[in-house]
Length: 334
Image (cartoon, rainbow, N blue to C red; front, side, top):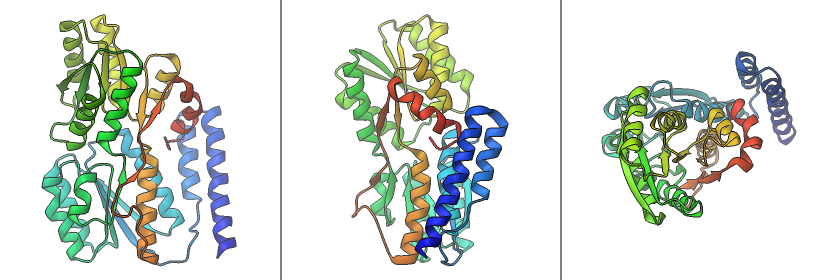
């Protein structure tokens, strides 16, 4: 078994190295095709039953962050001989119904986000009553244990916010704007509140409709035009960083734009100085570890965390680290 596992891991690693070479030399569609091929060519490293795990998230359509989470989950699923199902809905009631549907399918494990925990509590508890182990991921660390989940995987949003406040202090910032793109998301509130806790300057909150980027841009632009003393804009998701940069330019502002989360565009913007810093919560790890820990629980009764969240962040990324991470973002794992 040990030799087989080693061989399988080396096969996946080799396929990924081919993907990385393709990403750096060709980019675009060919790089994405190579990445998909690397996953498809993987072989299970175990001979456990082919269990079915369902991941249900609060993602909206087109959110690239969740592509990275899925990348990790799918690669772990290949290794662990798991049939992986993914669904999402940014409406909490609809997300809860997707959990109910997974329970009705009698899946062997559920991975779920708790961005709006009150709406998800009954569905999560129904899964547990049905004997289906649940791991929460990304959001809902404070509610996870109370809802009966095995563990939570992600970053502590308050701690991440505090790290941002500390970084703003190091940069000598005095007045910052925290842009919340999903009202009702407790994790977003915790991030901004964490910033306010450690930031020695003044923090303002701006609520925007994250599903409408033109509106997001105009709202940030209007705020920067109205308040010239704002010297920082903090967005809570990588796709919104570039929008904030455009708003800053149109407003004629010199405010630094910083962001939570990482993608290829953010890595490039860090390198060229368009962005100041990013907070990486390592979404690939969130997906990978969620599947892997569910497998370990099913196979061996293992649980990590000791009743505490398994933290995947925060990690502050600046220009100094951006070049190293750029290749990883291109292959879809950071």
